[in-house]
Image (cartoon, rainbow, N blue to C red; front, top):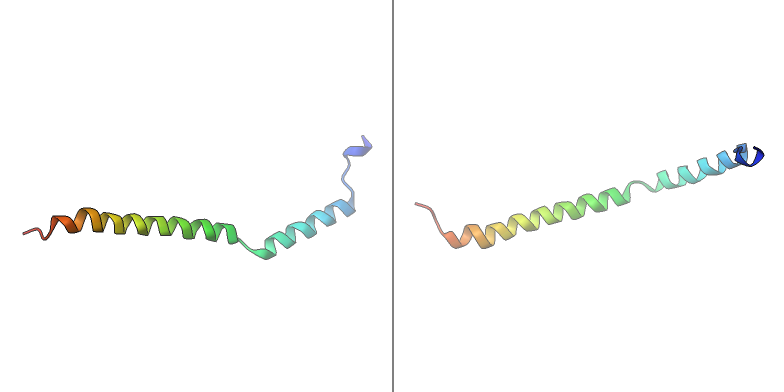
Length: 59
């Protein structure tokens, strides 16, 4: 079928779009990693403030 064939021009256009996306970098991955880190730090401080400190010093 003639409509199913991919032309050289279409491949070059797709390569150009992929190169443009890759050039922008993994900003989404960094955003997800930053949010996950912030959540872990917030949980740590919440545990420290609401569970550890109220118990006082253990002797």
